[in-house]
Length: 485
View 1: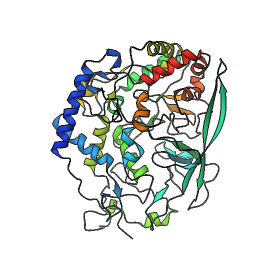
View 2: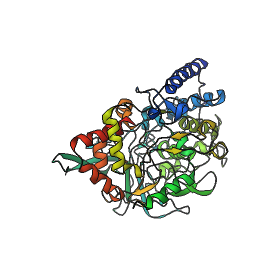
View 3: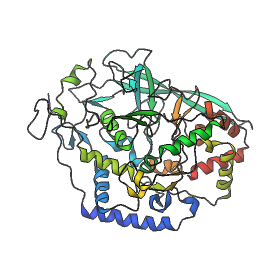
View 4: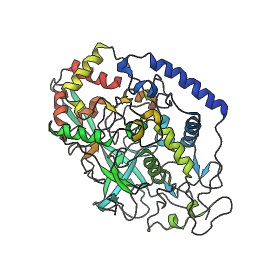
């Protein structure tokens, strides 16, 4: 058996690349300062004027020299391949995994596309698994044989992949009030080539695509009391937004969930650590156990860098995380300081009309246009530039019951099987430019903004029905507004 996870020293980011990076940032910061106020999604420091295929990859305009070095190191680590020793790369992949680097799921820091009809889920889309009940902290109880995330890759010739996920779509049509017919599609999950027996019917499954990553440091900095106040106001409008309270592993306490499709992670740092163990199979101090359920013997028999170090091989019970703390810190800073693209076409009459319709349909009750981050002394991280920033993310970061048609039936901490966090809309109009598609919602089923709206149910059904009864011109204006964000 090969030692799985000894890691090589990280390559250093060159000074020339760092200088070029900050020259570009200064230019973009100057452009942001001359924008129309409505175009500033996150103030002058956090708003980027870049609208090309790098729009989700620009750092904020105010980083210290130390933060700049960490940003560059984090960007490099985000794109580095994890491998099995002695292959070139970062040693520590697997034993089972979904992808070998962060950027394979979040290409250009964007959103992964939906799985093509009849195709295997790869490069971003994945399936969460659980059975009835919870663990000691309230998290979903993992499947006893396949764990909490289906792993479609393993170490070739040594550890088998758990199998494959194939996605097929069932189509249905929705007729709008003016007679226009829209075809919607719903994904169906099929497991193939299972290595450890069938996945029984009571197992809860949930298909997920990887979301875009801009503005995370700002969303993390919005005070909890602000979001709770929004939830309180929503009750007067017949909407029951509520936070998901989850387990903060690092601080060993219950905390408000902010990230993930069901808001099941409390911080960017924990989200990164969870992705490392779930997607790449790399351990951190936060998540120290490999993805090796007891039934998977080859997985359990593979030596791990969690018990190995340096070039000297395994050393018994000394735990050494495969993702060292500096790598976790650098990637977390990198993701926290990605700027948000500025809005486009803010003076377009159709866009302005669409904004009014968005309000009238009460889409803004949940997709809250404006929030403000905490003061300098209350920030949850060390990015001082995130203090007291007025942002326009179009989210309340709360859970909402979206009805049976969008339900995955899989609870996650306090989120029910039909509840989802309101996703931020900023940057959504550049998705096709950055990632070459416009697939939306948690599983990518919606191929555009119109389809995404028509899937809304539950608390959002009234807003959806207002959209359905608009004229064709008004629907187009509302969509054009959303695509300007």
